[in-house]
Amino acid sequence: VKQGVVLINKGAGSKSVRGSLVMKQLFNGAINGRKACIYGYRCYSQNVKPVKLDNVINGVSYKCDSWTNVTPKIINHVGLNLHSKNHHPLKLLKDRIVSFFNMKFRKWNNPLFAVIDNLPPIVTVKHCFDDLLIPVDHPSRKKSDCYYLNANHLMRTHTSAHQVELISMGFDGFLMVGDVYRRDEIDKNHYPVFHQMEGVRLFDKCELFGNPLNADEFSLFDNGNKRNAHHQDGISVEAHKLLEANLKKTLVSLAKDVFGPNVEHRWVETYFPFTHPSWELEIELNGNWTEILGCGVIEQDILKKAGVIDKVGWAFGLGLERMAMKVYSIPDIRIFHSTDKGFLCQFEGKTPFSKIKYKEISKFPPCSNDISFFVNSDSDFCPNDFYDLVRDMTGEMVEQVNLVDSFFHPKHQKQSYCYRITYRHCEKTLLQEEVNKMHEAIGSKCEQIFKVTIRK
Image 1 (cartoon, one colour):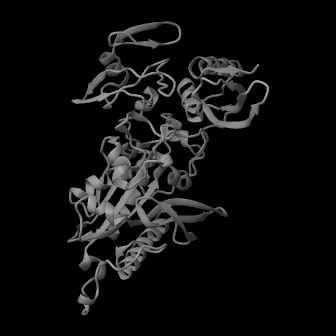
Image 2: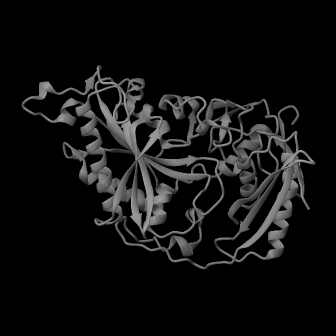
């Protein structure tokens, strides 16, 4: 990179163009951000120094720094909005859940829950973490888990990133839906881009307690109430009990609406930095317990950040893909991103209440190849960097990547890793010859980017 020129290595040949033009061509102005350095349309900011250039997209300027690790492949998902595409299973499920809340909760004959599903996915670290009381050293903030534009901006990792913003705008009840981005392993249940729904409801004293004759005896707050495993400090015991009962009744009703009235459920206590107490709702499907959402009583300090001092509330979050895979019997999360007509036609003309069971177009055979390498002492190797490299180089042709062996070699004083990459295309049979070419290319790129030594 010299004088603002970014070199893009496209394999067979390369060309250099001005940085701002690169961003416009690669991302079509769809995102407020830019990359550190690009190799084969891939940015590996943990191992390559970022380009110290400002870039203005949609009127907002972002400067790359040592945190920049978002990739063009990830950026290409921005604006797809699968949760809003007609006849897509994610939209059908979203509409089913929205319908449930619109029917169950109304105020003055209007829906109590506003639906927000078009907020851009670029957020600040403050909105994504600080406002939600997520500690500075929490693992969810790490570069290995998130896609950062720079030290202050990232692709949202959860729809909760908009919670304080929406509450401060005056929303007492809302469903926030959108795409979220996390660096993760590769298998049938994980994808770096997926969709979440965040639900929030706030109550003032009258809404929570109603209007009993002895209303003066009740209060939302009690400064003498100390924090324990079952309630926050400052909120009255009575308010906590009513919030918990209302939350659990609402979400169990939702589960029964989506999965049937006879579905078995159970509550599991858990921890979230932004709610207390917190639970996960699990349902029994085919003899197995499956977690479908997390929820809890909103931390009062979060409401105070949003300027709300006279209300209490609850929140929940669920993954649309995870739930849709169960509702429609979809076996692989990659299928949601397929444009194959054989997939999409199964949902055309259907309503959110239609009973649909996905029928596999064809089950193509897998090909598995192993890759083993030593990590050199000057390498900043990170497993999620490796997963991103595999995704970027193979598109949707990799079904799973498993770590099958890891050891420290005492003679060479190096760490060794062996990964098994399972190649399987959703729409065609892969030949072993083309798989071998991709596999060799992955090895070469690993040597170039991560400074590893491939074990023959």
